[in-house]
Image (tube, rainbow, N blue to C red):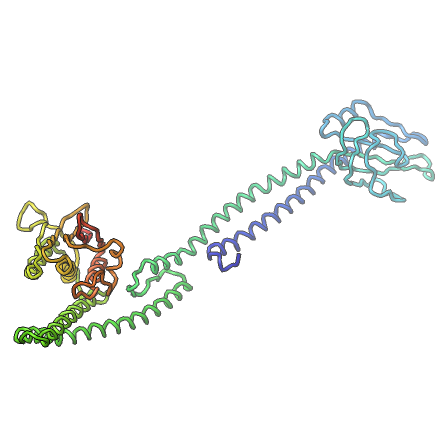
Length: 477
């Protein structure tokens, strides 16, 4: 797997924990060798003492040897079956006199062996002395001595004492375990500290990611990361520079749209008025039909301009210049409903309000915090859409209520509704769910923008047997 597919945290942990593992293994090998050396030194000291003691029991007498080795001393040497001492006395070296015949000989028989100095070596006891035991490794001490009354005719004697290597290996393993257990605990503790340290060191990156991921696409405010390390601060500054450039570009485009909408608003209103007057005075005929189309286009263009201006007011830069305040959502809905009754009569639609009345003391007002102008714009768009598309003879109801610590504003109609597969797309700008009417596809997009700016949610659902329910959910203060 290539390093690019690893996360930064994994790479840091790999480079920090892998050397610890290697050092731990190297320490274990070194400790085992050191423990083996110390175990050998302890065993060799025991063997040397036993070899010298055994050598003192073999006394020269004339040209022969007197072996003063009582049975009790032999029983002491062989008291522990699992760790008994084996011995051999030979003179000349290699010619058996006393002890065990199967002890391994020294690695090399020198022509003039060092006298009085013990040699230590490892060998294997072949187990052919009748005890039925398989060959086993042993540690052997060999001591060369000279005896004889005539200095010119002295003979050499070899005294060997061996001990099983099993206890030596056990001692080495115990030393290794006693050494590595605390070292392993320290390694584990250090790994935990490294894990926590890497996590804490990378926490600013997670916070920066959260600041970027949690933003809306049109939120171009600079990132605040003052407590971050210098490396991340440089990254945040680079992102802020990019956001500032994008914001400057977007502001220019929005300013152009707003200015163009303002400039078009007055001439379009004049065109709409003039076309209405011309239609009222013109006699029936082809010219009247053309004037009607001109009037319809002017009306649609004026509506589009008004929607663009409303959309401009929902942008973050515009919101910073408007102060949220406490307002009665029920009063706002009742006022907007009353204002739109004449338009509902023109469309032959029954428009009504169902909610708390501040004039009645038994009904508590539904208070929210928001910008009255924008919330009014959102409600006007919802009711206007219902009046446009519900159809003649339909009924539209505006409801306000408090449910579970939230304020709910609902606009319901019994018109044809919106297909379920289009209910998410209708919130996109310039998307129209139907070709009927003269809408521009911005109404619901504006409503969603306003609702989200106020920390709320908007949802569309069907009404049985037919119709549409638009619910706005706003937080209560």
